[in-house]
Image (cartoon, rainbow, N blue to C red; front, side, top):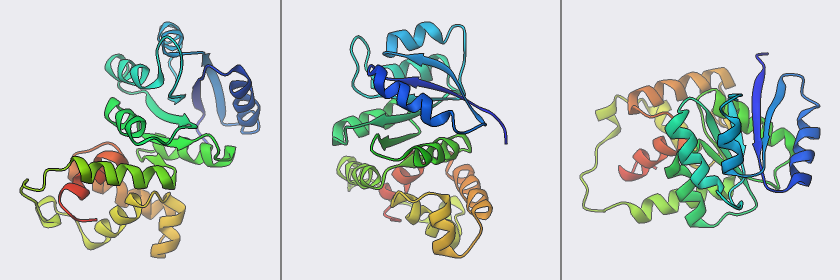
Length: 217
């Protein structure tokens, strides 16, 4: 399995140490950077570039949302997964708008966090179930009902791809989707990759936004 270069950004050193210890159990994960806030992260990125950043939301000097926007501006290829105790609507929505590929809660067990990291690196997006519901509600609230809606056929989406979109909107990961649709996880990944290509998006949040705006889910 290809090695994952991971950065951890959190102002709580105890939590950072816990994450380091947890990920040390996985041979294919290498912690390449630990930062205490957004400013510290940006300074260190000059010497070491991770594949993905686990980003806390609320931090002093520069919070995770500001840091996410700055990282995506200067290092667009780095993936960012928000890891927070907060599930407030505003923080979730601002994080996604800033460029985060996913948003999960710190209460998730390490194996779930690792699954989320792997999903994001494979081109998907990961959200805790409660977060996925909030994103859906926020997009629906933001959406102008007078905007013209397009059918899935305008994007060349198949019935199976619409089914997968519905499961993505529910916050399900590849394994859960594969079990629900009786197909392999690799087949799910292929469908999601095709779906992103057809919608011209790069993340779960973007795909869900288009689906909600057009009333497909």
